[in-house]
Length: 302
Image 1 (cartoon, rainbow, N blue to C red):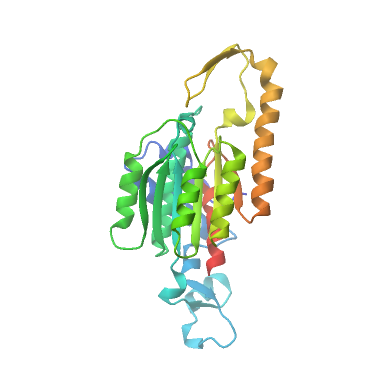
Image 2 (cartoon, helix red, strand yellow):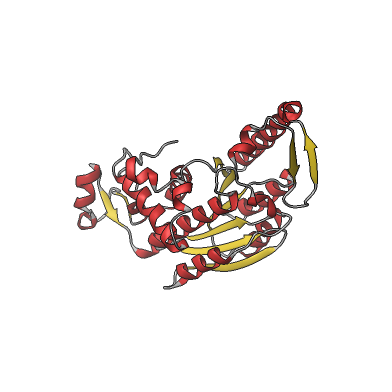
């Protein structure tokens, strides 16, 4: 899905461009502001960051609460929400296992995921939602509980900037731990390549849904992982175990593509059945799709 950012706005959603921007905070602000600028110019202009501050007018609402400026832009009646109507606990879970270190276009999956995590945290904070952050490999590396207090966003971005790649992955572990710790309904966003045991991952996501959380999963895969473009005899190395194998790509391409497509299809099918919003993301692509997908889930909390 293309949101509608064009020209300059879309350029600042390109991961290769974002990589050249300085601090993680500046990256986050650039991504979100570029995304919202494009959104205001698109057919989705009524579905912008303001969606967290307004809801559509309902029969019986006080007419004095209608925002006529929003009406002029969207041709719809919206009323200003009260603070207690808008706040949601949002948790961003970031996979930093070794396999996330792969990148064929100058930006690794881990870097792309960190840009997206920072942008989501920035967007959540701008909506006055409480933001939580967790990074993990085969264990939880860092965890900041959801908070909307002043200065918390900077703490989240600082942790994001300092996180390092780990080794093996255990995606299910933080899912179960977060599910056990939830005290109120909210939104959980998982950023991972999901190159783990799918049965265990799906069980962990089911646990979150059972606890009442809305869950958004972004499976982040490099373009090479999706297309397997290799032609010459190549030495492939497992980034989590360091195991290596020398192979002729033409002999294994069909088998590999069947396996990766089977994995993706299983996640898509089984997660949809339990009400999880699943999205496959090619990390060579701009970030607007992922941000729009999050906004779609967030809108259910209006």
